[in-house]
Length: 357
Image (cartoon, rainbow, N blue to C red; front, side, top):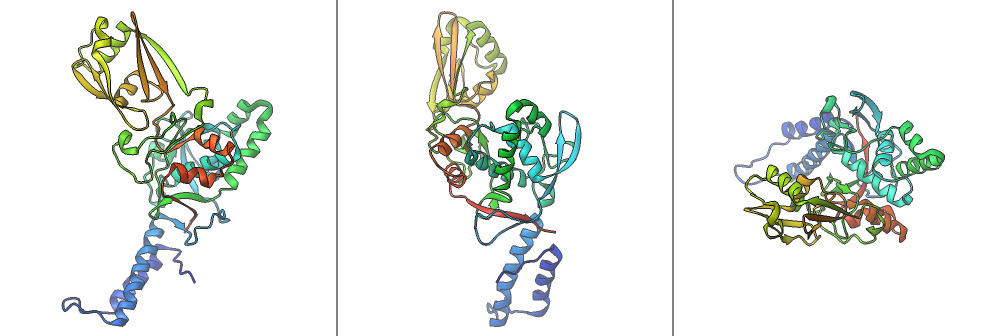
């Protein structure tokens, strides 16, 4: 039997009833058996209150049957149009799927993306106790530099051309077949980060964002080489590179004629991403170097040739969480969306999350 409190007030009534009706002698270190039983009920009430405050109820049975309850509603700031609108979560996810992952990808990869995107969004819906984006007063926005990439159904249909109906049906299928499912760790929706391609191995969250999260640790990510942007080489003149880096890192004191002796990769993480780089008279992180030059990843090599430095990157994105091209490779090998998600997010569970009033 399951007890459910649909509102915060019901849970609060349960708590106050226990306090008013069942005193106990805590000073002398004892509590009656009757009060003990009610104490257990109090714990249950606190748990239910926490769920009510978040507004999102996790099913006690971790069955992966998608929820049949009404969809959540959220506010979305459309940054290109500078306006805030309301839409259902599933409607929003359709646009995110089209903006974040090629519709030509296998259905199971798209379903994994749908769950990751839904989880990311649920953490930001204000009515669920989340941390909203705030732009335009909205829960979330459509600017990929801030939130998740989003494209309208009309824009997607135009970009898909003759494949419009096929791809639209596929995305709606991915959203519908995972309806309500989110990834949780220790009872809370996870920070479901994802990226395009890891370069063969994902990265620990603490190495990129400073915060260690037990479900965002590096794992193998094979099969990404099919990505058109898996590797990229950019050639800089020595003067251009030294000028750019000296402007960003004024303590480096780089000279165009001495770059090869002044720049040295000192350490890498297990993922292959550069941890530290000696840059003239200073030492910087690979992440800072990537940002300064707008590189595709922090997994890079340096090659020198006369007056030119060629920087070759492997992978695309921060490398934390689910690799989208890794998800594609797993799906092509027969993995379902559950296997994909539990591979990239260590120790998680997938559970239905439904709105409460």
